[in-house]
Image (cartoon, rainbow, N blue to C red; front, side, top):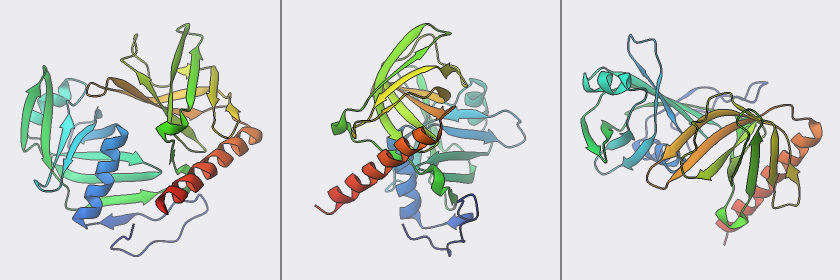
Length: 251
């Protein structure tokens, strides 16, 4: 993806310099990827210390707008309807994005759940961390993931959605009860990779989002206590996924 500003050299941590993106089609493309991945976004209202979350439900280039889900916790809904300006921060595939100011241009309710319309941003601050590149795992690979928490005495089984050297996302059918809590640890993990290896390192929950539309819970996890052998397994699998993606693109 070509940016309108010159790319800044990568520093020692593998972070590309902050860039300003103003091309509307490129902004739309990035936000569409965030929408499809069901990645949570963080919302911060001006002069309000608290942070809120939502997800992007729809991106509409023709109507120049985004539709976002109900803002949680509930106070966020009240602040949005007061038309307070807010910022949006998110990430996808190792890309961090940020844009402001945003205001609600319309709202509605469906099945008792609020949603909001906001204009597509004119400018987006964009930064990529190479070391956090996330490789999508095709459904065709049917990569099963089973995790167990000693605290909740429950085993959850799902499908690996994407993976990077620092963590992964897993999709589970339905809504998980009791609700998942940030930083919750799953000590026993078995992710069977298509290359024959298995990841058995504990996972710490970073976020969890339930989608009513597809009736799935998407969870982002961080690997903890992963050693060099485990990092090599993840590296090889990420490389395998990148190679497969390039192969399909050339067909």
